[in-house]
Length: 120
Image (cartoon, rainbow, N blue to C red; front, side, top):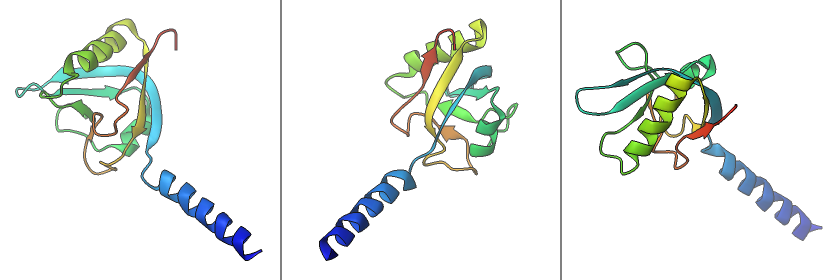
């Protein structure tokens, strides 16, 4: 019985640890995009829940970004551009970690990036 309690305790801690640093998956159409003077790609989803997860920038409240120096910048740019011009849905997994609600979210920091959902 004691061994069963220890196993249950370990499983509960493992579950807590796996969700403690998780963000939320947000889907939406890119409502606007902007490339700033340093080359960073800024954008915002039409999903207002994403607005409550990531703080906004000073320019038109864009709150998601990809740093100009990211190795996959061209891929991110293409997906964001396709969404904004073709009205296609994107999924930004694990949004909000590690930035939280104060700063805009660097979507390259989550490790999951962005996914285009054709017909979504």
